[in-house]
Length: 232
Image (cartoon, rainbow, N blue to C red; front, side, top):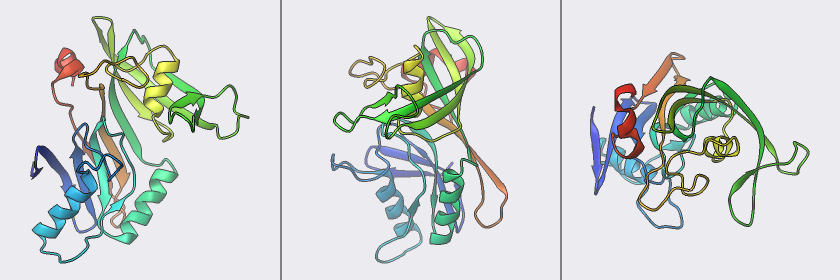
């Protein structure tokens, strides 16, 4: 795998052609520039394209989906406006397939579908479960959580997202009594703990060839992941 290096960041290229740049996002690297002023993935990748292909001036790279800053794994970026439009349509229509590994605090015994209505609290920025679907701003959130193995009071689960709501995996598991290990916002994670959530698989149709592209990524064997290294 080709690696893009930028300061402390090492970003693996999972797939690249004239239309797409697919990479393995490191945990704790923001996808795009934010108020922190920290280096971000989008600008690192633009610099990579500018240098590798000797493109002067501003480089186009379309951001078509996101991962929370503490979450790592598979991401796809578009090199052209047409590719960005077609990929964005797939993500909006939920025709992509997104799978995550998550380490849950507690026991999940069988494959379970979670269906909730989520709403962001504008004052705190936290996402909460709405009392009902009629609450203003509430959006339906659906995921499937399939346990792989249990160890030491934790469950390694494969999560398939059916909708793409902010903090969806973290919030839905928490409200169902299975918060993610290391989640400081929704799961009682302590400083120094790395949230155990990783985008391990992403499938979508190539915007021009229409062939199915499937990306895969394995989380680093640190933190909670070490306990489940034999299953990842």
